[in-house]
Image (tube, rainbow, N blue to C red; front, side):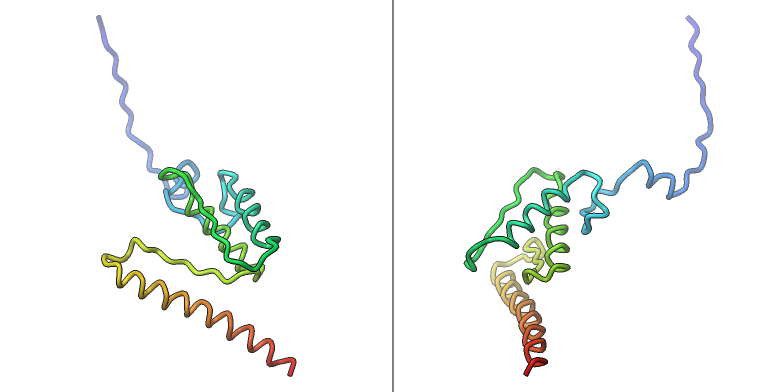
Length: 130
């Protein structure tokens, strides 16, 4: 039995050519970057937030296994809320902290900064009408 092997030298491939065929495993931020039709789900969540009847606290959980796009959905929701100015958003990553005290401290300081910024902006707007 005779075996035939063919071998050819690979052609150089540019980064642009590679990017057309492969996607980095990084979360996206904007609807325009969505290639997996998650933006419609993000829009439904934003509409839920926009049209909720009570001013009570609202907690929304996004569940899924690793790599299903949870972070991408959350980032799209965040960018949609920021652009519509319906809510104050605050991104917090608890995985960057080794101890609970530091996590809690940064969470509340960060939340305070986010709210102060929004409140100052609202106050400045209010002061214009006085």
